Image 1 (cartoon, chains in turn purple, yellow):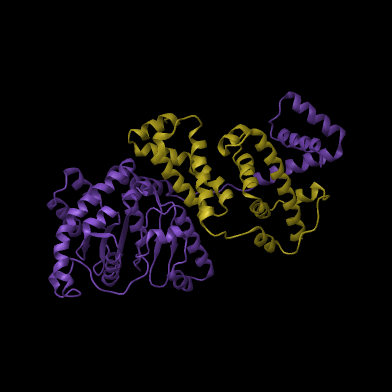
Image 2 (cartoon, rainbow over the protein chains, first blue to last red; image 1 turned 135 degrees about the vertical axis):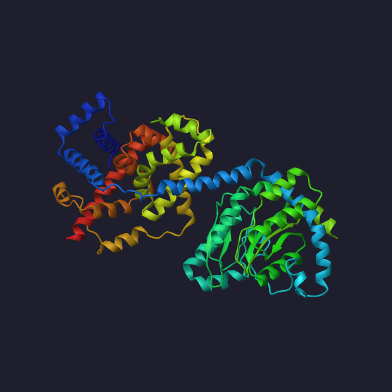
Amino acid sequence: MSENQLSNEELISAYIDGELDTEGCAQVKALLEENSAYRRLFDELREVGDQVRLIPNQQLEQGFRDQVLRETGKSTAAVVMVPHQAAFRRIGYVLAGALAVSTIIALIWGFTRSSSVFNSPAERGAIALDGESDGFSAESISDFADGGELPWIAQVAAALGTSSQDRLREGLREFSNSPRLLVTVQLSHQSSLDILEQTLSQFGVAPSAIINVEPQTGTCYFVSGNLADEIMPNHARLVFANATQAEIESTFHQLRSESGRLVTLQISETPYDRTVERRQSLATKSDTHADQRRKVKGLKIHPVGPRQMAVLFIVTTSSENQDSDK
Amino acid sequence: MRDETQLIQAVLTGDTDAFGDLVTKYQNRLFNTMFHVAGSREEAEDIVQEAFVQAFVKLDSFQGASGFYTWLYRIAFNLSISRRRRRRPESSVDAIRDAFGAEPKDNRDQPPQRMMRKEDVKLVQQALAVLSEQHRTVLVLREIEGNCYETIADILDLPIGTVRSRLYRARLQLRDELKKSILESE
């Protein structure tokens, strides 16, 4: 097909769309009069358009508007509580507050570590202890960034099948491209995804890379978000775990065994309201600035049911923090 | 009834109901388009919802250089691309062709009248689904949305010449796919 022919055919297509000026229209009319092949092409192209327009319009179901408004309401709340532009400062405040809180927690830890796991009911709700590694939350960001194979991929993939394995790898690749923030949720709780999304919203994180796999034991998600650049300078990692006690214990130990400093903001089996109250109380007791307290109050602990605990671990791995930890 | 500009201003001052009016105004139009671009109701609904939410959050960055709907469509279109990249393809050209049956013959010389007799919407939808994303998108924007070349170029950030050329090729491809489908269905 010559370039001239192609040009004529494009002209015919544009003529059908009414997108030609007077001169162009005259040119096409002349082509159609002179050449039967162009006339046939004209008919066919026009017919194609008619066929597409015959497809009935798709309509949304009733209630979509309200659904959207509910979602925008959540976004508004997140924006008000945690302005994206101030995300780094916010995390900085939280980390600072958390470090102060850690002093209290360290004391509790000092009592509990020598006496193994939850020796007395009074120690429950303080710090979680021994347990088998769950293998999910202890992988370092650099492991992801290197794009290396993680040993648990095969286990997860085995439970998921080939396609999910591909999705998992895809998620890891995507995460590797932007290895900023790792949020791990491992739980068989039905509302895990909602909880994760709400929590991310509160941090101002757009979940730009979520891979959602559901092995038999629970759910895990990998998220890299727009907190990335803001959180990396501190080499901080947030792990939000919403899990059973055993899972939290193992998570805690695994995180603690790493070189970074672990700050546990809250571990609690208390009901939702009391959990929030306690976190706010811890923040208030510390020497944090009023703004910091406000920010800490902005964090949310979600209700997770009577037998489950809500935990927010903040791990910092900057050299400064490591030094201060020694 | 407030016009679009008034609604946007109202939303920016905190009037959520005004945003509801914008949703009501554009939801079905956007959904209908995204249905063809994304290929399924569920995916289209998710995209449209996410697009509205993003539009709401980013509304203060809307400059008004293009119309609100054009801006909204661009958000939805980018979301569609992003979601497609993230998920494993659920269908492929091969899969769709398999669904049609035997290897298609060369039907380029089929008279248009044969096509005229087959007004089977399903066949058209299937043929549309086989097109490349680029071709399907431009065709949907033109034939279903009824946009002029300038608007399509604006939405897709393409030169008008590319829109014209792509539309022609999209029609040609759809014509061929329709002919194949019709023959194979007989």
